[in-house]
Image (tube, rainbow, N blue to C red):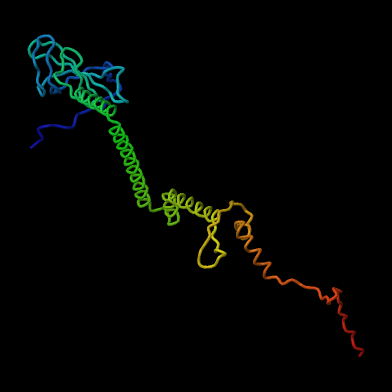
Length: 276
């Protein structure tokens, strides 16, 4: 049994497609589409209410000279069910909705309600901050904490993306992976380096020496952080220096010259060397 619907067409041998003229349409021609009313509206001519979801045979066209970040905006033409007055509305990509344009008014616009609620909340917040300084401080603290949380989450996402990229790219060798890990921890290494430099500077400025009085006591001496290393005696206070010098003088024995009873200096002669 032959097919009831023939898909193949017969073309004569002398058929030339270039001889067929192309139909030239207008640049912004209207198309007939079947749609449902995207929102409830009221006709401005007769006052008839058109509920959301009612079906219409509408005409669609592209709005010239209007777009939203490169997104085209379309206009639709419908007729009122009672008086057949023309009603137009167009798409609203900014609010992901439709906007009534001509012939009817929308009964409810949700984004306007949201804007009114946001404005009311903002005014109430400002009034509360003016009357209560602690409330203003709490709000600023909460805002700063929220910003820090957002930054931490963003840093985690960046680290995860970098890790996924390293795992997915099998051509990267082990040394390259280690370098990328070092780049991720560069901030921690820099912070650790700064802390070590601070500790080294503190050790250079403050030095500990044992107490001269004896015992296990330790004296902390502060000095200038320069390249010349001072001696321990120069770091001691004046009282300690005087005490050390007095002890040193007591330990030295004075050398007395030999004198007789009359006060005449006696010189001892060295014995002569014996002849061999």
